[in-house]
Image (cartoon, rainbow, N blue to C red; front, side, top):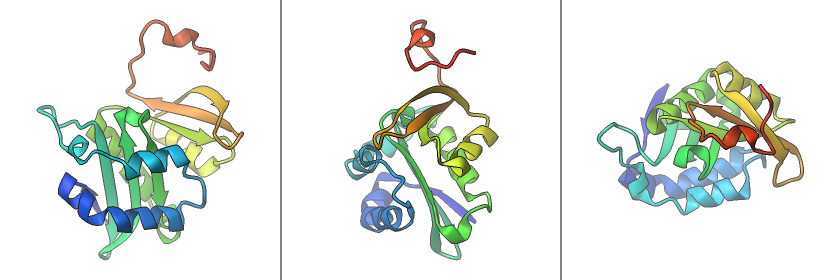
Length: 165
């Protein structure tokens, strides 16, 4: 399995094909907001700073030259976060590799997972992410917010969605 963190040039070249991959294999679980964030991604956000971190990351897993999975996150996940793995590559560690690569590229990661999406919740927990709140998602389903490496200001623990520790 080959893992690629896309540059702005690679993103612009592959954008159309990768968006098609998401639509085909996202099983209608990708939110309109995250898809819109990816479609309108400012390519310069993919450039790493002096610490090697970037404002956004698009990571692609390839197997035998074909796309096996794709991960995207912007602004630590608050500006959009999605993960899509080809059905033939599921349960092979592809999702874990993509999530770790996004965490490494951004320094921290937050994502929202519908409570009925057991495989995605299991992945988040397996990667050491913590469920910090629950809210009604865009489709009306209960949705958990997972975080790893996120620093909060003093007001955050009192947020209405916060789960008591």
